[in-house]
Length: 581
Image 1: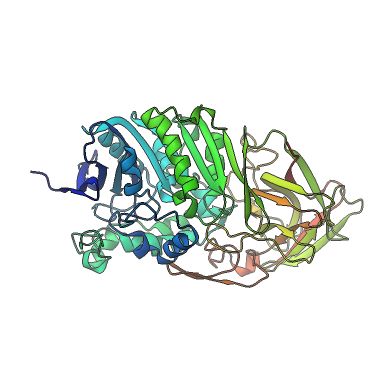
Image 2 (image 1 turned 180 degrees about the vertical axis):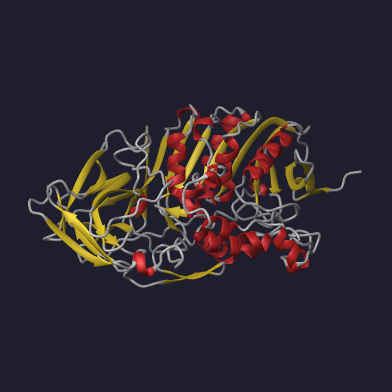
């Protein structure tokens, strides 16, 4: 007898809580949705901590309600009761001949065990789930991975392990470098892991049982069947936040969570979000750029973090990709350009354009020099020596171009070179690339989470300025983050600062600005209310804030900072200016 339930429901064969044995004997639990008469279908597999029985709208009500209100095509053709956060809706995939396999990761939802997000143990479990799926009698032996965020990030990890039956991956808004993309931006601790772990992971831990959510699907407990004591729950999970805070430099802890991109050879579609500064966007670009796959594609879009995965635009792109690689369909994917971009214009306007590579080969890498006398961004460096000082933890200083004479497109990675001294042994640099209308109102976009994201963001802790010379590129500095090089108070050092990629077509008459700050960007138009699962005031950077006092003590990072200019100290902003085709 099996210890799971199988039934035909809503035109699908559904198997609930199917046990999958891991190499150490632990049984994780999966739900399988497949065609009733299936005997030879490919599978889409997801593995993660968000509890497979939890309905999208119960977990994230604001996100669900806003999405279906703005994009009515999303709920069409489905009862939507099987919709779960950041994974495909089986009612919209099973009729196309796919099996959808959802696995609760070890220690979460219905799967027992020790919960340790993004660990090597999880990656091996994911590998085993892929191979188990491929061996099932109803599967054609081809497995694809598809999902957002967590369900995208761990795709990089498991793909680097090269499961034999992994046939294609679609990494939809997924970071690939846990240290640089999520934990420490430029070496500065990000508050996001605290918010995420406390609000999205611990409330789904296996063993919460009757203290957790009750599933709308079957009335059972999403984090059951056991109900464990608080002491047992604590012993069954890692100290994710403490682990992050306890490893401020790139070390073995982070190495086990960073995939070797050179070992990823499977066909790949990496889909990023222009508004994903602070999480995911860098990973989608770096993953695409660094993967060894000969068949790889990059797509970048706008709007909220979760939206386009479910819209007709996103779903059709995914199905075309998987139809080719999992089902052998002659659907035109062979002619799909390697790069597909939703080019941003002010006022949330996007126009699709295809390209052949990333960064774009025709990019005109253009330096805009910072002028301390006029506070401008100029085409030539200033002739005179000079300096500007500001206090740490302040809004810093902003440099701006004159009104642009012609429409200008900026698409690609960005960087800045600054010469900086501090009255203390360290300082944090927060760089903001900005665009202003002729009336000086700032152009922002609805980011992945925050409704008022600036055009570009970059960060660097001055004591972690050491570059990896082999991996650095002129347009993308790469820092080792493996040692502290304290500043000598009052002595200037040269800093190369990575600014995450962007895209915007700037009309004539607008201005480009660069703010060098001592703290996070703050949208001048005021804050916005957060989401029910993120009860914060959004000020322009969403939950990706850098305000932990232990990581940024005032006596070190609140001191006076000086920018230096002149001969041998030419500070600039490097922008990817794109001429028309």
